[in-house]
Length: 395
Image 1 (cartoon, rainbow, N blue to C red):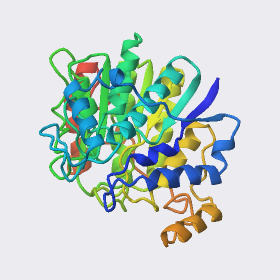
Image 2 (image 1 turned 60 degrees about the vertical axis):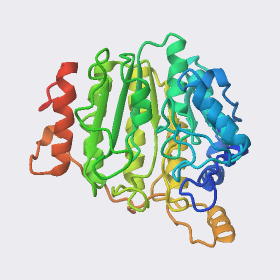
Image 3 (image 1 turned 135 degrees about the vertical axis):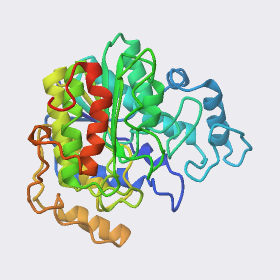
């Protein structure tokens, strides 16, 4: 069995909304190059594969035929008049080849789910995935088709009975939640900045799933300014508990890194070191609960040089069971590449904190009602935990 299956394809660079758009594909190319320079892609436990585009039928397992037809129309002519479906806006502008570019990201996630579920690989990573805002009938928030939802639907169609989805992007994973809102086979967990301060304005503790799937949607809405300690405390106080209660057969996670303090689009203050800790927890939970069946995808992240490449290289390393030291040097060849092509000074170390530990306190050490972070955590625990037979105060 392959230890970690990493999808990389130069064609991922075609998912490009144009100059000045925050979601620039260079973040993917820089991540791939950094992973190469770190030697991660040459490890015997790692296999790198090209992407296979999703078929229209696969995309339509989640998305409406009308949306697919509309996306195809603007792909052929970005200036074509198309009404509805969220097309033509500033966030998700139309571009030539939009359908094929997104179908490639969707196909890579489906193939990752297939490889992990069939036992071909233990873990799979698709950094081009994570398009969690796309809705069944509309593009949204830089996302055309929802590769995660299509991948999870593929798993359900194979007979998987319990899929857990965990999203640590700064933005609420609304599209995935919407797709499975009333499906008890899928647990969606999103730890994000509160919708009162950030797009898409959803994902509050009281949003807990449809009538056929009570307590299947878990939302932790953190206050703006939450840093490492609060962010990790929120994850540790909710994610392991509900996953253990749900008993998933496979874990799918979205690793958006826009919670970072340098990200231009969110108001959280999280370091790469904390993200490394969160990714490690998710990896360990996959081994504890699903026999290691873990599919990890990318997502948001708009500090293209300082943050995304280092963070997602750590993700690849963790999936390969070769975690990197946060204090080790960034390869000089990669730094020179960044300087030569982009005229920027690249970071020198793989982490942000110089090895300093992050203290967050386990929930059992005491609830602090005057803390906005603890208040946010408790709101979620009160909304969700009783339905899973858990105690909001002590579990």
